[in-house]
Structure formats: C-alpha cells, structure tokens
Length: 115
Image (cartoon, rainbow, N blue to C red):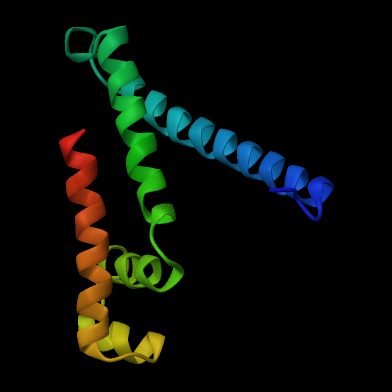
C-alpha cells in the first residue's frame, strides 16, 4: 500500500519518536531525583533501576493505547478523582458509557500488570 503523503507521514512518525523520547527522559529524571533521596543501602541496583524505569515508561504509555474518550475518562477518574456521573457529564456521555470506557482502561492496566 503506497502512502499518499509520505513526507507528512514521516514527519508525524518522527514527531512521535521525539515526543516519546522526551517523555522517557522526563520519567527517568523524576526517577533519578527520587533515587538521590534514598540512603545508599536502600538504593536499587542498576538492574532494578532499569526495570523500574521501563515499568514507569510502560505505565506512562498505557493511556495512549486507549481511544481518546476512554483515555479522558480514565484520566478524569484517576487524576482528578471524578465520579463516573461527573465524568459522563464532562464528556457528554451516559454513566454506562463511562463504565465501558473504564473497563477498557482497566483491561489495559491488567495487560500491563501481566508483563
């Protein structure tokens, strides 16, 4: 299948790679800041650090695998503490639809936990 706009597709792909790299660096910086507050004996080994960093990056990327409405519902619930009814009003959907969105998000969380 030929791309109609190969240059635009390449730009979009490159932008996504750069954004992901910056997000990973932000996560790594935050993790390293936490590590500096730990006493020597409690500090994780380099292998543990790498594993935790990879897990944090996977958690950060999880909402991106959801459709935009499900992502919004999940973030409104988890970060803003809104109820399903409040989320429904905010998104202009029924509470039942919010439950479906949250089920999609929880499935992604479970899949991430199984890795």
